[in-house]
Length: 166
Image 1: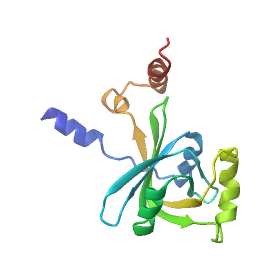
Image 2 (image 1 turned 90 degrees about the vertical axis):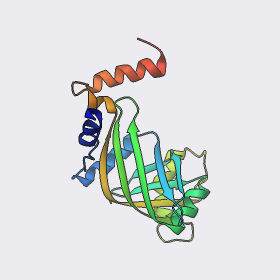
Image 3 (image 1 turned 60 degrees about the horizontal axis):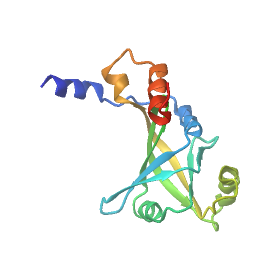
Image 4 (image 1 turned 135 degrees about the vertical axis):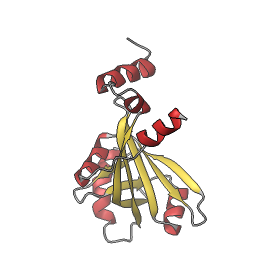
C-alpha cells in the first residue's frame, strides 16, 4: 500500500515550461518515435537522424520508417523521447507530426539541415516535422526513489555498466 502511494506521488510528470528546452534533443544520439495507427495499434521506432530547428520543431529523417510514416498519415499525434544514457535524464515531447516529401515546399530546406548528420550514409525519403505541444522531463527511477542521487553517481554507474570498468 505504501509503495502504491509513493509511485503515484513520484511519477507525476514534470512539464517543461521553457519550450526552448526542445533544443536538448540536439544533444541526444538516439531518440524514439512513438506513433499509433488509426485503430490505435502502437509502434515505437528508434531514430538516429534528427534535430531541433530554430523554430522549436523536431525534424526526423525518414530513412527506413514505413510503419511510422503510415501511422502519421492516419494519425498525426506522436510522442518522441530522448535521453542522455549517462546522466539518465531526458525529455519526452508530444505533438502533431507533418510529413514532407521531395515534392513538398519545405523538404529541401529540412533536407539541408538533416543531410550533414547522415554523412552521406543514408538516403532521406521524407522528413517528419513535429510541432511540440507538451514537453516533459524523463528521469531514471534512481533520481525519484533515492533523492540524493547525483548526475555523477548515474554517470559512474552507467560507465560501469556499459564499459565494465571502474
